[in-house]
Length: 333
Image (cartoon, rainbow, N blue to C red):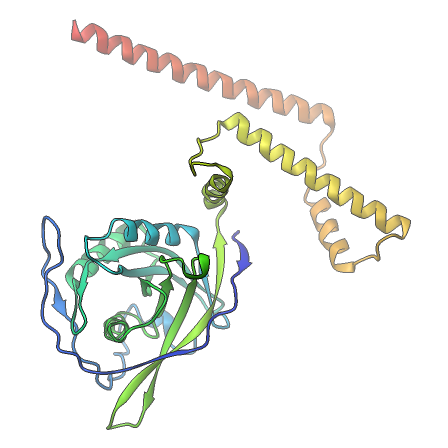
């Protein structure tokens, strides 16, 4: 189950007019330059085809009460692609992948897409994006295209053109902005969806309305997040990995501190120092009911048995490694 933490309130809507800058194919820098196809000028977009497989999941009103659930691996991938960007590139863009149901939109993965932009033109390697998505479908067939991301704190006219391309891949795509410049000493993360505005048949524009971003994580991702947070207390921002025994010890210490806090709360309620809260009481009752009923003797026997099995597996693994190393030495003689 994923735990959630609400993000700060989103910024007010940002509107960008739909102009028609001159576009021309450009080639991103790199060893093997891909063929980049320029995006067409913004015009009143026709309705998406009803048989598009990717847009079927995002049809209708935005699900989940206009909430986007974002996993930390997505943010790590975006920051990594920004650090590895081509020389002279002001920002990086990429495709957001994830799942959609009637309750939420969850962004679980992403990949960067080569592009090149200047003041009056923008070109995106659309063939690369399609190939990458086909490869991702082989690994995670449940993930679909949800939208795209861009580094920076603002929405530009080029963003309108790129957003139009992703509108062909997913109905009502999400646009995620990550402020890697750290304005106001923090990384601002915002999500938007677009809506057309203007007079039909005349000048049309696109308005980006903000969405609420919530950060969620799986238990396996929590390990990496906790390790990254520990670097804040290191002078050189570097910290080593903990051993399995250290992780068990730290987890046991956290459980002990939590139990101490719960017992103190229960004592304060019984003594009348704190008013009883029915919600907290029901939560504690559910927590107690989830604890398996087992005698201390049986628990100790089970724990010792598991430890012995673990030690045996570790011994056999080390023995196998030693035999392989010895065999390599004999073969090299």
